[in-house]
Amino acid sequence: MFPHEMERWRTELQSLNWSQGFSKEELMQRFPNIPRTYFQSVPSGRKFYSFNEFWTEFMPAAGPGGARETGGAGTAGR
Image 1 (cartoon, rainbow, N blue to C red):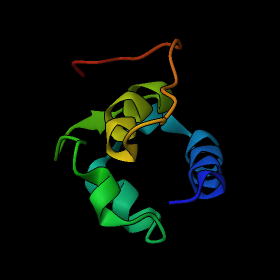
Image 2 (cartoon, rainbow, N blue to C red):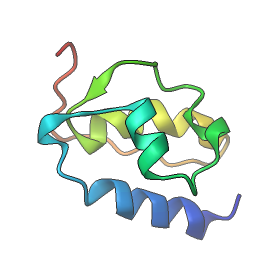
Image 3 (cartoon, helix red, strand yellow):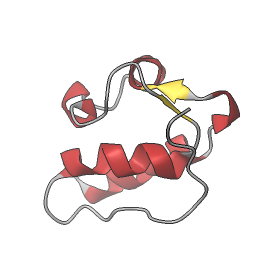
Image 4 (cartoon, one colour):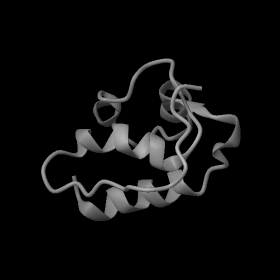
């Protein structure tokens, strides 16, 4: 995958209003342009309430060289 695609997806995902939460399945439906294989490391059924919380699960699928976003107010365990 090209780095500019990952950056575009990151920008699109960051711009969402995460206050109501999104599951992996909801994000896959909302972003059909992101290959399903990139969602493999994201737990099914779990709601994510912040971009940073989601991105830390999503990024392992990007493979070597994928920068992980850190910081922010995650709300794990909701």
